[in-house]
Image 1 (spheres, rainbow, N blue to C red):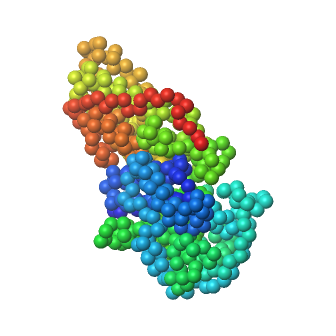
Image 2: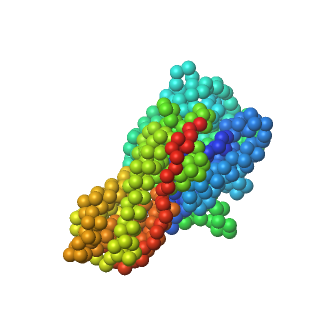
Image 3: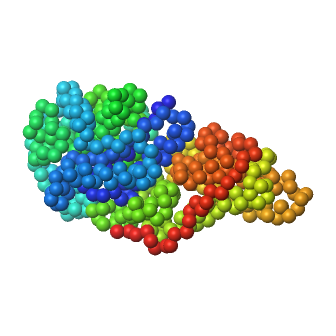
Length: 507
């Protein structure tokens, strides 16, 4: 079985922030988990380097758009590496192979009769690179996302007959009720379709930074048409000398933020239908990370710097916080204070302390060897079906709920330590068998949660599994009693060392 997951490609008109990291983290969790399930995984991320937002940002800096792309694409690659993301390819829309494939698909849409010449007039947001409908315009003709005045524009362009795909899109949504998740975003996209689709500019005449229209070199392909096609084009050249399209297309999941829902859930499938290419299986939509009242945005100056967080606390801490603090799919507030609290109370005190206590007691009372025993029936019921529950939630693009299921078991193991008090059992030779059962159950519980946490916090979970003497990541063994006793344990070191508070900053 194959599994193909993508992030949006990120605009290079600014440097990365936590909002970008959020989607990459979620995609990596899914990619890692699917690899644990034995799937043939392809994970794509990259940068969107054409269009007006990039051209304007470059002009403001006194450099060319290509120079800006070269500068900031490196930063986004560094962000993926800093987050310990396992993306299989990093696409740039300035890649020559991408340009060729975009021209090929756009020509196919044209040849299939879905393109015509026309004039567009309306309110335009240069940062969204999008003409806005009446429902997308806020008071004073401002952009609801970027909170800047919209510009009234009139252009002679080539158009894509989006309106012709209203009924096919309605059928798609009727046949596939999970095409967009969560349900709220499915309803939003379907409502947009049912309100009546307007034809879409396929080209831009006033802009030169982009992919030339194949049949009209005086215009460039509209940046969103160019950008959306990255998910398809990348497969044709991601591996030298090999075309992966038949192996991985259609994409299993596009992960996006809710501000680009219309493009991915309406325009993108219509484009693919027009080109006679199979549509993706699912679009997973997350909400906004908010600092104060507004979406985290470099242009608004309200960001948590992911590189700084990773340098101070490690990638695992940021990965954990991003999916723990705000339920994936919903809007929610993040803050330096919230991060520090989660780091201390949950990562250090609950998971880290559970690990150090368990390994210390196995070392002290059983010479560092996990006892050969059976798991405590009291714990078995609490862990029954956990791996299946986590897998099911990740299949439904619910990484936050999956993480919560795992974390409930971390808390349960901590209560088990307090209830059973192995240090008291160790004082009574008559309780040796019971102590074996308790220590084995703790080591097994810790192993199971760590196997399931590998996708979320790979570095910490790997260290802990190595310290338990059992590094097998197979999800089929993520159940109590699947690993026998006899493993030799070791000291993992401090998984989540103390960091002086107030060091994480919001710009």
